[in-house]
Structures are given as C-alpha cells and as structure tokens.
Length: 568
Image (cartoon, rainbow, N blue to C red; front, side, top):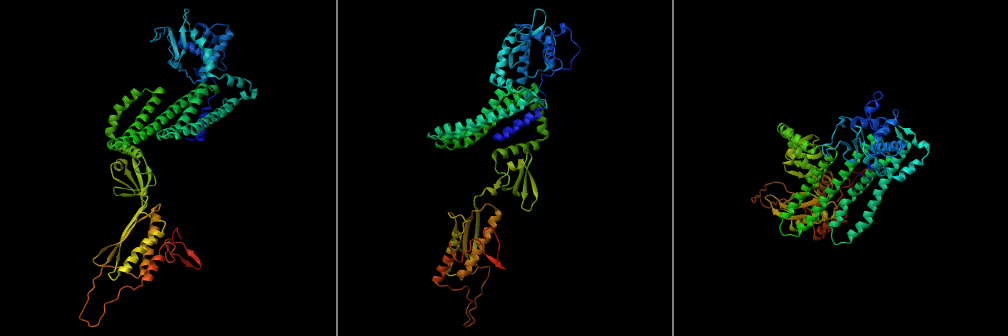
C-alpha cells in the first residue's frame, strides 16, 4: 500500500467516525433524581454516577466528586481528577460496557478475593473498592495514578499548543472541533514524513553497509523488511499518539482497534517476507550440497512457513480483538464436517482455487490449454476458472479439474516454433539445392523477428516424390497475431527465393517414361542458373539485400502504400 493510499484510508475512517460527536461514555437514559445513598450503592451505580453526571446537560459536580472520596484535597481537586480520568478513558477508546458491570453491592473479585472491581484488564490500576461505609468508590491507588496516566496519554507539548489556540478553534463542525480537523491532518502528515525519513535512512545507510559485504542474503533481508518495517514504524507512531486527538470514546475506540489490527497485519507482512528471505538463504545453502533432495524441500519449507505465518497472524489478530479462537475453531470443526460432506465438490473447487493462487501456473491474459479447452484466461474465481476460447465462447472450468490436470501455458513461451518440410522436385540440381538452403538461412538472418542463435535449415531426406528440406526456426514475437504475420512474410520470402534460384515445389506425382517413342525427350523441369547468378541470389536475399523483403511485400495503389502488417 502506498503512503497516499494509507493517507486516504485514515481520512476515510476519520470521516466515517466524525458523525459521532465529541463527548463522553455512553450510558442509559437519565433516571429521576437519585437518592444520595444510591449513588455509590454498587459498582454499576458508581460507574453510572461517574459517567452520567459529567455529560453535557446533566452535569452535577457534587455527585461526581463522591466517586473520588478516597482522593486527597478539596472538591475542586477531586473534580479535576474525575474529569482527567474520563478524558483518559475517552482518548484511549476504553469503552465501558455498562451492562457487564456487577450490580451486587457485595461483589467480590474472584482472583484476589477482595471487594474490588477492575474496570479494564488492560488498565488494572483503575478499579473500584468498597469502603467501610458500604460505598463503592475509586480506590486510593487509582486516584494517585490518574496524574501519571493523564501525562502518559496526552503530550504536554501538544496540550500546551492546544491551550494557546484562539477560541474559534474550539468551534464544532459535525461534532468535531476545528482544531481536531487540523490536528488529524498534521498527525497523518507527520507520520508519513517519519516513515519517509525511516525509509531514507534504511536505503542510504543500512543498504550501503549491506552492499559492502560479500553475502547476498543481507541485501535480500533489507529488500524484504523495507516496506513492512516502514509501515510498522508509522502505524506504531499513530497508535502511540492517537490519544492526543481527544476524540470521543467511540471514535478513539474505532481508531485504536483499526491501528492495532493494522500493526498486527504489518508485523505478519514482515514475517511473511522474512520467510522468503530465509528460503532464499536455504536455496544458497542447498545449492552447495551434492544431493538434490534438500533442493526439492526448500519450496515446501517456503510454502509451509508462509502458511504458518498467515495462520498464526490471523489467530493473533482475532485473539487480540476479544474473539475466542479456541471455541471458534471447535465450532467450525463440528459444523464444518457436515458442510464438507454436503458440499464436497464446492470445497474441492475452493481448495483447487487456493492451489492455483499459490502455485500460479498461469495468470489473467495467458493463453493456456487444459484438457480439451484452449483459450485466454479471463478470470480465476473461487469455484471456477473462466477461459475465453478462440471462437469467442466463455468456458468455465472447475478449479478442482484445473488443479488436477496438465496445464500447457502457451502464453509463457518466449519463442514460437515453426517446423515444416519443403518438398522440391527431383529436377533440382545440387547447386540449386545448396543455394536454396543457404538462401533460407539468409532470410532468417535478415529478419529481426527470428531467434538468431537457434535455427536449422537442411536438405533432410529423399522423399518418395520429392527432395525434402527441413526448416526449423523460432519466432521472437509477443503474441499469436504477430506470429501469423511473420510466418506469412517468411513463407512469401521462400516463394520468391524459389523463383529466384529456379526450383519448383513438388507434389505427389507418378511419372511414366516411355522408351518406345524415338527421339522424344522428357520434359525439362526448372531453369538453369550460372554459379554467379546463384551466388547473387543468396546475397540479394541476405541482410541489406535488394531483393529480400523480410518485413513483407510492399504494394502501391494510386501512389499510396498498402498496409499488410505492422512491419511495412
């Protein structure tokens, strides 16, 4: 993912979440004015008192400070602690599930055996405790930890900067303050700048050191970790600093979840690339051994490592987001057995698609032949592969069949072969045969669309009705259409060469010679040429020859050249 895409993604999430107004934790609708003794009756009531009476339109400072009874100082100091604690919870995206909080006034923690309730397992220093007056309040340890938590959540420099902004920056637009819009922009910009600086340092310093070593695996290591480590760096920066934006708890929670998943995904990406680097290192090691067994094991190890990294990464991401992976796998195992029996063919096609994606025997646009189907690959789905045939029909081949059938990928050919036998009449003289063969070689040499390091043109055999010349050449062309055009040009050149050297092409015939007719002479086949004329014919059809036309024939009509191909 490029930085601009990352920026767009963050902005999209921000815009989607911006509908949630800057505010506090969500609690049930307000009830009638509570009795004083009910404010702190149990953990649930205490949390309700702490949250509800700090919301806009329901502010009751005298109720809120009762939750901070164990804190030292006057009411203003206690109220400040309560407000700071709420800001910390909101900024960190720590959502309080009100229904999950116990409403039992005699609640006892099952682990410690004490009458206390920890609000968040990720923040164990924030908990409620029961006093001697049977009231549930924030513990003394919690009140003492609030200043440090606040300092760790909000940057003092950033807080100071926000305090210096003019009043208009606190105006709200769609529930978000103006300074928060500006902060989001500079927050993303700063993160991308840090990532670019990190990548610059990696490219210009670390990579230079790697180039100076005699090994190649360290260069592969840097290539593998460059992109994912840059995104790990910027994602970690965002995760550590997003709380300074001081969004509402729902927005902060969405950001924290997204950033944690993004960080986990980039770590998985890093280890995925490292598995490739390790596989390359194993390839170098195994290439030095005499046995070929370890060479065959390296691809298997690479694929196994990749699969292991992906599976463990997905499990870690799910587990970190509160999903019980063990119960999920167990449920999938029980229900999956019935599904597998009922949809065996569907699952076979699905795993066939996985095999195609992992093995990559072809890609979209390749010309392949599998079974009786031949054509161009248009789409590879989870159930079938769609192939456009040359008569323009669309054939869907089940992936299970594709995975278990030989695939001839004609689209990956670098060269396209032409093998043919030219039949000359028996009236051809040795000199003409040699000139004809050398002339075809000259045509090949003069055409840039032929493979020049591999071709065979020889007088190959005496056939039952002809002298056979084997022509075995390779076209260096990008596609089938160009191959047909060059084949056309090549065969036309051979026709012109045959006329030039005076040979004729044979066809199955039977000749009956009658000796009873006195003075009758057999028909003279072909034309005679002098040695100078034959040498001239070879030269004229060679490179820069005047009679050779390797790019095709030129025909003019009304003074304008007609186009018969891409190479006029």
